[in-house]
Length: 142
Image 1 (cartoon, rainbow, N blue to C red):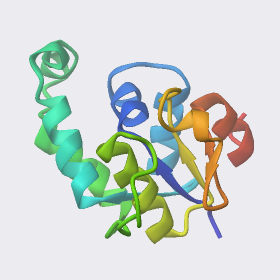
Image 2 (cartoon, helix red, strand yellow):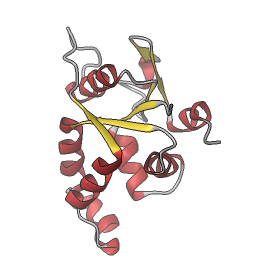
Image 3 (tube, rainbow, N blue to C red):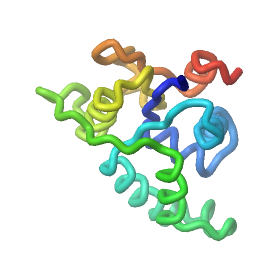
Image 4 (cartoon, rainbow, N blue to C red):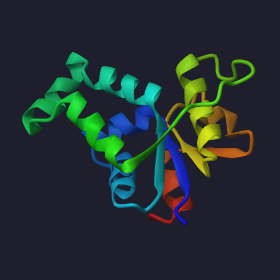
């Protein structure tokens, strides 16, 4: 059984527009190396972030739209309804949605590049929060 993983949007966006560990993680999820879990709220936010002008220079040359990318991502993800946290944890409502998504998915880990709000926690409710590089080693991709 493949591990269930929630990937923060900063890692997903980086994986979509750049090479490196985030891109390898997105590709590995598409290939079934692990089960990528996401919520509709995270997908909506991903579409909005990818639609920003500063990201257009990465998407337009490849002929990809934010909607198309989100649809392709959704095709290989497990969509869950995030659990409502009893109280704010991170100080950032979007990061709390990531935590609620991980709880709902019964995720093995959360992958994030957010040192301030998520990585600094180390874990939440027993779910480790890992950097992309650490996650690659934990999942067995390195």
